[in-house]
Length: 102
Image 1 (cartoon, rainbow, N blue to C red):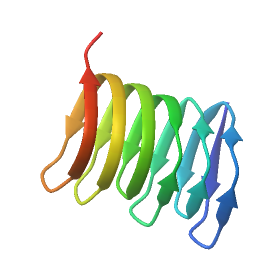
Image 2: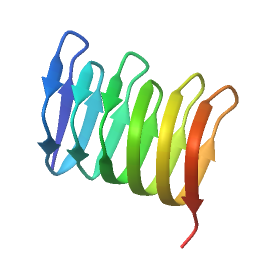
Image 3: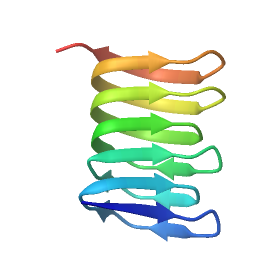
Image 4: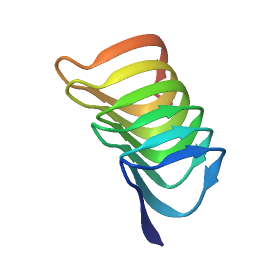
């Protein structure tokens, strides 16, 4: 499995699929399917995410299905989330619907 990075000077229009982890420092307008998805503080994602682990420090707008979700400090989330495990840190903004558990 590999680790992929979308740097802060990159914008992707379209879907991304792979194995391993992906760190998004730039912009993605499309769906993402990876084992681990990490949106950095400079990252902006609009689309749907399917992952084992989802971490957001940046901006996200869309649907997420993940086993483990962490919404970090200062992240902005407009989200419909289905997850088994959820952590929301102080000052993370969350608007939407969350289903947590089984």
